[in-house]
Amino acid sequence: MQIQTDKKIFFASDQHLGAPTAEKSLPREQKFLRWLNEHEAEMGALFILGDLFDFWFEYKTVVPKGFVRVLGKLAQLKDAGIPIYFFVGNHDLWMDDYFISELGIPVFHQPQIFDINGKTFFIGHGDGLGPGDFGYKRMKKVFTNPFSKWLFRWLHPDIGVRLGQYLSVKNKLISGAEDVTFLGEDNEWLVLYAKKKLEEQHYDYFIFGHRHLPMNIVLNENSRYINLGDWINYFTYGMYDGHFHLEKYEG
Image (cartoon, rainbow, N blue to C red; front, side, top):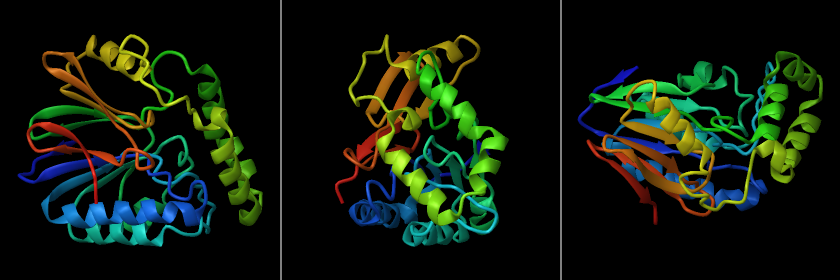
């Protein structure tokens, strides 16, 4: 996919709206909305790299209650002609066609390659990539199995959503979460994954979320690995204007 624009490209991930409760996540939701409002005029495109919601499941005619402020803002940005690209994370991997049909926002379940003003970007949430994390990888196969999704739909939404929210907050195996500390370049599995991909072909930037740690790591003289951090502790985001900037929102 190709993007040509003289405006800035913005990247954000891991807002985890709804966690640990709707009331406690509301200030973070409002802060994220202020960020969107402040940068709207200079926004050439917006990439949301997963875990916007701490839990999301689409029944045939039902989606989780709440988040109307963010959904409304994304709809307004899209209607204003700003391209938006959504990558599912490990907490909202059960997203189906709601964003596509209701907001006109494409949803990606796998990493994608974008050409942005002549630079090659490898973009994804980051969960399940690289070596290790075998427990989560096995669990993800169960969660993404069509039969598992079919079974879950038989739960009444009041039960299913509440169960999903509880497990999303409590179960580290389900979330794929580790202690949020830098492991060193030789142990950061997304860095190792990016270096392996570079053996196949060149990419200027690898952009991921999931790890919740802001990282900007030089892979070689022409390639960088970026982790966007989160909107829980760091409130960091990426901005590309010919150079990639990893910035903190103080709003």
